[in-house]
Amino acid sequence: MKRRPRLQGLAREHHGALVLARQLMTAEMVAWPEWSGRIATIFATDFEPHFCAEEHDLLPLLAATDAAALALRTRAEHDRLRDLATAAASDPGMLAEFGRLLRDHVRFEDRELFPAAEQVLPDAWLDTVVSG
Image (cartoon, rainbow, N blue to C red; front, side, top):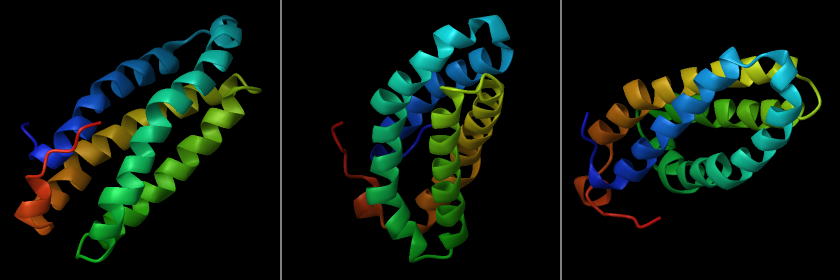
């Protein structure tokens, strides 16, 4: 689905997250040493900037609308994903859980959060292109 300009960059980043989620959900425990180090790096370079952009730009605006509950859920899932990324460095059992929540979170944003934002936020904001 085509997103409004302000959300396009965030939506494009979701594809890579879904690929990673699938890999983590099927990763064998013997691959954990490799993944444990990679998750911290991937999280810091890819997910944290994405989460921060949403938390500083999108979620405060949504919190002041009828979509406030979606903003709260998004922030709670971001916090849980941060916790799981940290836990995965020392607990191989957390990789699959991180992958499942990441998949579910991306689907939630694509299917609920972004459509709600496009309904309740001003066109002037939604149509502003943000370079990343």
